[in-house]
Amino acid sequence: MTPSSAAAGVENVLRMLEGRWKLVILFHLFGGKLLRFSDLERAIPAISQKMLIQQLRQMETDGIVRRIVHHQVPPKVEYGLTDWGQSMCPALDTLLKWAAAKPD
Amino acid sequence: MTPSSAAAGVENVLRMLEGRWKLVILFHLFGGKLLRFSDLERAIPAISQKMLIQQLRQMETDGIVRRIVHHQVPPKVEYGLTDWGQSMCPALDTLLKWAAAKPD
DNA sequence: CGGCCACCTTACCTTCAGGTAAGTACCCTA
DNA sequence: TAGGGTACTTACCTGAAGGTAAGGTGGCCG
Image 1 (cartoon, helix red, strand yellow):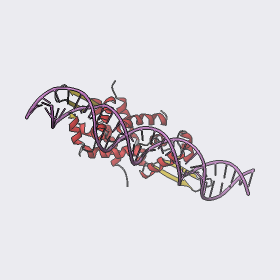
Image 2 (tube, chains in turn red, green, brown, blue):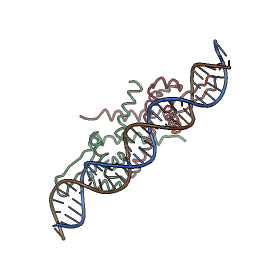
Image 3 (cartoon, chains in turn brown, green, red, blue):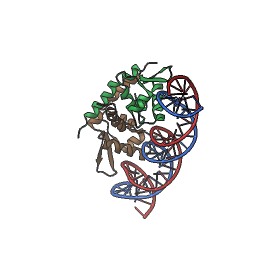
Image 4 (tube, helix red, strand yellow):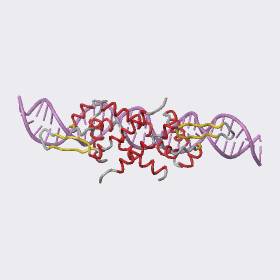
């Protein structure tokens, strides 16, 4: 495994997490919570609708988020994490622990 | 710990890793290796001098990289990881393992 | 019939990370 | 004194991420 290929692997992971709002959304959905579009808007007031849907769609195609449409009137769409998305939690914990171990 | 504060913690970590070249540099320095400026240029041909020095400086102020100046002619400057920088390795491994566990 | 709710979509603009290219400082060798 | 190696520095430019604001659909309710 060359330095470049290893870096590429990690970069693929980072690409899923970077984006101004992905992590905020992620942490709102951790724990198996299901939230509606408007719930997320309320939970993250600073985000625009465009950004919210954009980041959700990207996380959906990355397989982190799943989208559950209830065919009702008025429309109801719920967002939650996939099993794989949930399983990211320990990995993020490891990062936080490393950051907490910083000297100085 | 609110979703936003947890996200902020992870974002701080990501800010240290994001940047087009940080990870590539990082993986070149893993294992206690010491490389000179020109070594890194040769190891990463696609990077410009400006970007190389910029990313090195940022990682230095983040406490990940250390800079060792040898007062010689011609000049000699070596770059290596701090202990804390080295200790990031397992955390990145966790991320890679998570990515490898992706279904589909 | 008109307005409202929920969930998007579109057009347009701004900002900044990163790229290119050239210049600087130092001293040694030929 | 001219050239070269090493380690940067500076000025300028570009593309894409993200922001703002407005429009669109579909049905129910008063």
